[in-house]
Length: 355
Length: 192
Image (cartoon, rainbow over all chains, first blue to last red; front, side, top):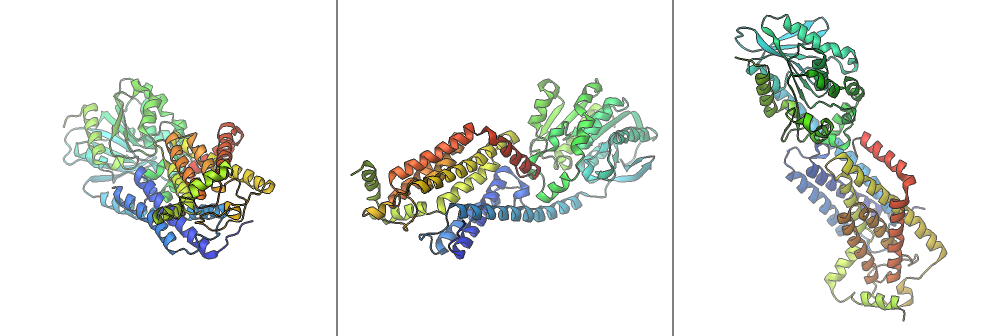
């Protein structure tokens, strides 16, 4: 039978365990860059180490300085285990909720800042296709064009600097809107990119022999699959595609990318794994023949680790087709300036585009 | 005089001469400090590892350590039902730096706890296991220093904890499905 002996002692021990576990979770968040567990905003881990050390050490100092009756018969093993477990659950729940509140606000601020209005844009609504067309200033003759497909959860990816980078290099960019996540279905999704290519070839400003596709996340899988079957697509660049169903179940590492509540929202798109399996992008890579293909991942990707992709593709396949950008994660990659520069440069080289 | 008591006296007679050492040992000997430190290290170890496979290995070690602790405690309770050994301060004049526990001295409960965790972790990770073995040994020695256990109580507790951990880790294949289920559930909740 459980016997907590003294309510005060039990409460003190619970609070010690709560503070110490809270501190340890901050140390873990700092060490493994888990923003989903962090209670500070900066990307620098130092505040996390400090906060963790203060909470953990402070918990012990407070307990031993203020708790009466530590050296009289007190809590036994079972009671301690129960209190430690309960404190652990409370500390974890507090951390996940507080961190979600902190980083949720932060992400909204960042997205708003990126949504600038410098680009010339046209809304596109043609047959089943919905999206936004971004055009460079002063178009002369027909130009290369890129069909861009974001992660489904991002909707249409106008805020990404990668689109601005491509337009600044002189490309016309058609950012395709997936539509609501719950309506994304296989094989209906296979019509998205051919529809976009057909739309672009009808436009006078577009050179139909210089159409490339850029896909992000699941959009990358679809870009590879579509290019494998549509020879009008001259080049494919995929940012952090999944390639394998197993990569859609990242476990704890997803907290490197987003807060816990965001992760739960991410998981609510349950069809993701199934769609990745049905798209079978790696099987279609071989069907691109000599058309250029590039897969880009951030080396901090918490969802699809680059090393796993390299192993799955094999060294030979990965050579020249797989690039890893330092310091970027799965979500930050399409928003990064380094990726934006790489994408613009790569399409310029591979669509043989002369300005 | 038995060797057990001679060894007990050798260690226990160190108590009461140095306030700093006594204070340090009193910190180690209570039920709250080392057990909480060990548990916190396990929390850190749960998240350790660069990839999922590495983490799974660590998480498996932690879950097996907890099961080993549970098994060792059941055996310890059974031992206490069968055999009661009075504490050293009951039959002898000792330097007592702790309260008077009333349960059986044999086998030592703290040593059982410490060594079951330490052995299970050591079978997976030598470095962390060695740290746990040091902490478990300190825990056991502190109990002798403070006059509440004989050396043989601690040795028996260490053997009981170690053996439980060995059996759970090396021969406990039948609990693998439960451990895998816990890890799978944790992964689904983005916590493993």
